[in-house]
Length: 93
Image 1 (cartoon, rainbow, N blue to C red):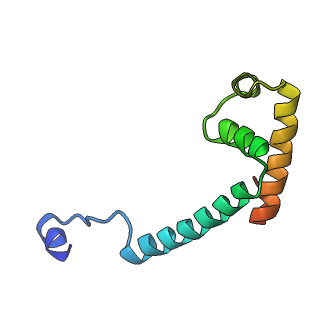
Image 2 (tube, rainbow, N blue to C red):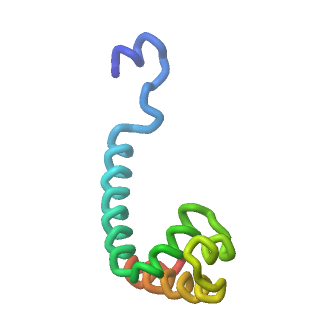
């Protein structure tokens, strides 16, 4: 790494190594917390949350994909967010 820096004058790492390590450790801890929070949800609540949050589906698209009414999607999503917030200790979800 030091040789590359001396040849090019460009740091090969976008951020200091200590910062990279700390952010990876913190991310791994959050990943565990998130997995635990998701595991604590019922399957229906988890499916709705993941389809909305990770897949970016609309309520109508989720309702169609799961074969449930749109109102059920809304209530499951509300419940899932509430439980995830509690599990993660985060009011900003």
